[in-house]
Length: 565
Image 1 (cartoon, rainbow, N blue to C red):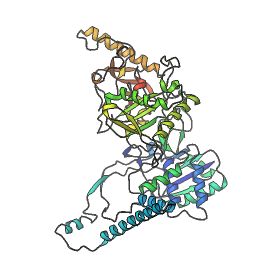
Image 2 (cartoon, helix red, strand yellow):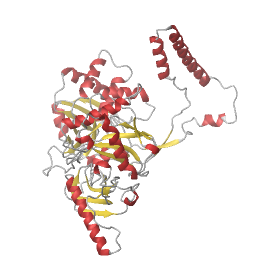
Image 3 (cartoon, one colour):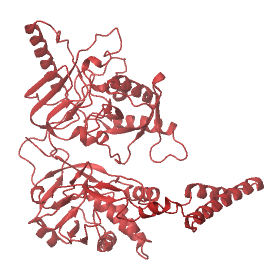
């Protein structure tokens, strides 16, 4: 067993939840501890003679499964009310750093130049960049030649109490027991345990700089004592209702690379993967949480450029993304990608859904599509999954440039609308709520349609002037929605509210969507919005109806996170 224990020296924990800047993160997430350990290792120069051993220990730890968490229960963490605090912005009147990338490139060109002409050109480029830095520095620190009428007021504004102020929040929890731990069932090799002990001993803070901590590698007796006073949070993909961050292989290198880019100045998001946790040592006696045939491990492609498409474009955009991806797949194209059997007939088994993600949450919900999710069936064999990942890899390789990082920009040509640029979110760094898988997959009893459902059967005229015929049409539509929900493996909802209007902000009425399907030789589907209520929470993603593989019938969970009723 390996156990890392953290004591809150001030008795409080100040850290922001990954998806809400007004809520405190509780229980503390193991991914945050891992990042703190990497920062501790890299503080100054890695300490010799133990630096390499500590790095090896971190690389060993990143490959371990998510740990059990021992921490005070959520209801005894005593989260304080969060109010905005207005703080002065940093003084930005400093000497700008040199253009390191251009200088490094010029120096590399100089070192590798073989021809005299190329070497001379590289020498000039290096000299020019060095002279520019010298000139910029001299200008910044030089005594002003004259003092203008506005210089005095500008200088006064540099004082901390005169600078512009920005609102910030500092959500905080004060647990009844200021100690928590992370426990892995497998023993760590002795060198790893020793190296982690040194890192934990140098750990100063976790979360905000005011969260001062003392870290140790705990023994069995200490963990047993902590377990008597804390709740247990267990990784459980079936029964878990908490999304908690952990890391994966390559995390150490990723954090080092991210630091080289932002240097603690640019905005950044902690790379991590989301793991479902449940509270309590024993699993609930009830059956596991119902879930649809679609898996929750979404492959998210974030929009990085190109047109900002409206929510009504989802079906056409989904069709074009699939069309662009198929040439990069093994031939003949696997059924999971194409949605068709080898004889060109429509697939009768769940396959990949291409789901544009519109902004339908938050104060700026306008329905704009800001990303695409590739949603795979939950029960997918290794061959089918490999086929999908190989197609994505070839698509990315075809557009990879020398300066591309983990994932290159992927163009989706849309004719007169322009070219949409997408980039795969490799490390779950995306901070926008719409592009976070948990937004669409977390357990909930209540769900509302973000895009309308394409009904499998024509229910009749929902606008009929005759009241009885209109009622019959709505009842037929309700029955069709219930059948569609069952078709994706979920229990029948106990309440279904079918509407011709919108149910979420930023969405559009069904009448504003183009014909579905677009092929005129196929019968047009009736589109409706709906609200669903289940007897117990169900896991998403919830994609319902005849357009579920094309971005239609996408539902959003509307229960408060962590609520079961």
